[in-house]
Amino acid sequence: MSEKTRYSDIELAEFKELILDKLAKAQKDYELLRDGISNADGNDIMDTSPTFKVLEEGAATLSKEESGRLAQRQMKFIQHLQAALVRVENKTYGVCRETGKLIPKERLRAVPHATLSIEAKNDNKR
Image (tube, rainbow, N blue to C red; front, side, top):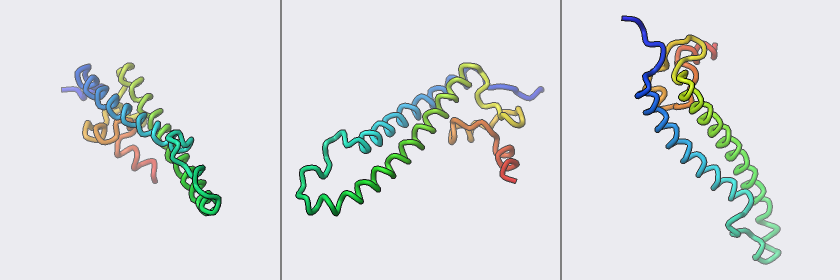
């Protein structure tokens, strides 16, 4: 029996559903972070007295910077998931870009945007 070179259309459909679920959640999280940065909810310190405003501006700036970093990271995750969807459509999803072998389903379920098998990832660390 020859070794499989790609996942079946049924398996790819299962992975696509998983990726779409993760993508929807990631986009929702990104929107929350973005709204937090822009104070879209109107829950800021503008209506407090000037004394408290001075004390809280530093904390608000740090919080916005952290939210900005988290938002950037979330956007990168979204882009990786979108790229995984393209690979599903191209029927190349789940194939390690280093070894050309199939990435185990367990890994893809845990990290649906993975492009490397564990072996290839460990080899890159050395």
